[in-house]
Amino acid sequence: MKKVCVVGLGYIGLPTSAIFANAGFEVVGVDVNEKVVQTLNTGEIHIEENGLPELFKKVVQEGKFRASLVPEKADVFIIAVPTPIHEDYTANIDYVVDATKSIVPYLEKGNVVIVESTIPPRTMDDVVAPIIREHGLDPEKDIYLAHCPERVLPGRILIELVENTRIVGGVTKEAAKKAADVYRAIVKGEVIETEAVTAEMSKLMENTFRDVNIALANELVKISQRIGVDAHKVIELANKHPRVNIHLPGPGVGGHCLAVDPYFIIEKAKEESPLIQTARRINNSMPYFVVEQIQRMTAELASPKVAIFGLTYKGNTDDVRESPAIKIYELLKQHSRFEVRAYDPHVKQEQVSFPLSTLEEAVHGAHLVVVLADHNEFKNMKAEDFAAMKTKVIFDTKNCVHLNDESITVYKIGNLYSVKAIQE
Ligand code: SAJ
Image (tube, rainbow, N blue to C red; front, side, top):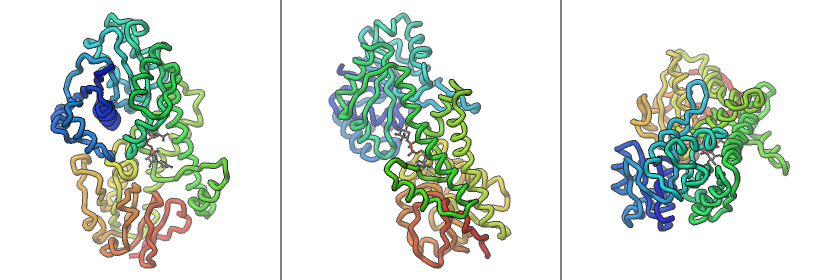
């Protein structure tokens, strides 16, 4: 197994390609985006991830990686394309179907085909295998077909791709073994072989577990406002219990994973998933809850100027997909009384459809700064950064601002019972 063809060169496909190339495999990376392919063949990358620019430049210079618009014959094919959801919250597996169809002309007996994209239960058996069978290859005898869901945390991808346990679900036992051996060439963590549907479900449950726990923390925020208690203190003390791990509340759950994957289960088991559905509703309600608090804080201002700090779905990433922060920006823009400015040191203008401000432009004359992503830059802010505000009030929804200056009022999402309307 010397040559690997990776289809989809995003946050998973690109680091995966670099790791295989760095381990000595000849890697062909395939993407439908011509600009991405051109950029990559110069040794530059189009996404932000720790350590990836250096590793990627190295494997390109060593001639171990090439980017292409079309697949090529290979020993191993890895599909790492997005699986978003449709408006009606059903899974959109079109990219997986297209990617599978794009490689079948290059498949030969004995090849290993791995889908890393997160997919609804039974997609390997009921969707991917039939596509291969339609093209004259028996997905159970002629090739080794498996699902190995990625489990990496953005910001730690290169570390976790190697150290995390990998779950390899084969449509046959042999396929699980063959595909697992491919990962054993790069992974230091345990590589576990199982059935395709079990691997599909374990991945979905990982993110659903986290989403449900975050929903509990977000519900606590609303309860705390009613009761008049600091939710952050409650969580800190409750988590001192050996068997308690309440997650962190915030402005909502974004990204392509936690805000999407639970729907893959709900779609298949609507009657049986009331808790998962409730958790989604609670987390989807948080951007509206944050806007309600902003309205409370600015209720006595004629034309409040609000500065949004952070547009990404979480801290220290440039990823704005399914971002609660952008939802909050859009909701505020629907209220004509608000003048809204947005500042995020990780986001480029071309990533968003509205004007971005610098830190200075955002705070100048602002009545309220609302922190929506826990970037390191925001954790290290100083009182003087807010000197040009009209009224020095910060609403920190990520509990990441550490300022101890009496002239600045900081409301945390966990202590909203103390909110007072801003006076001009
Ligand atoms: N969030 C909270 N409170 C928390 C933790 C997260 O509000 O206590 C929010 C974040 O701000 C963000 C969202 O949840 O909006 C998701 O962030 P995350 O850091 O929990 O996860 P992702 O989406 O970056 O990565 C997750 C990870 N899954 C788990 O940890 C179970 C990662 O390991 C997966 O590989 C990734 O999804 C994926 O691709 O599925």
